[in-house]
Amino acid sequence: MNALTISDTGTTRIEDYIHLQNTRPFRTEHRPFLAAQKSIFTKIVGEVNAGGFELAFAAFLEAAPDVQAFTKNYLAIGFKFDYVKANGDLSNYVPDFIARDSNGTVWIIETKGREELDLPQKMARLSQWCADATAAEENGTRYDFIYVDQAGFEKHKPSTLAGLAISFTEYKA
Image (tube, helix red, strand yellow):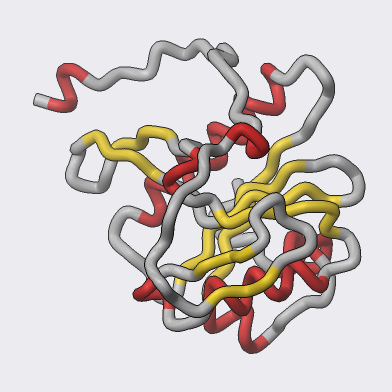
């Protein structure tokens, strides 16, 4: 059924922008957090099942000298997009982090402790979204993405976002 109803129309347009400063206050469960200076949110709270990896990654972004600003992409922000899952169903994908580097490039970053079945579909959709957003952006902002696996990050932890982008190229075309 989905094969007959889901189709790519081939057009891109910007419908609206998400401004982080307009994010309404929201609550999170009491969990470990990182006090952040480079984020609009004073606390970065990790996911329950992330095993501390998201907090370690947030600490990396906080310390990286070429990161101008970053945020964990909470559901309250509303940054998500649809994708077609491995089984053909339509679903929503919410990337983990958004960061802006000192050159003005906006990086959408997915962190994973373990690989999942739909990961290739999510990364293909993220790649397409970045290309479309860059092409549609009138002020010249460039969008790109990075997939960061926990084992690779812990083994080869770079000190800059540029180093991360060079080291973690899985799912890049």
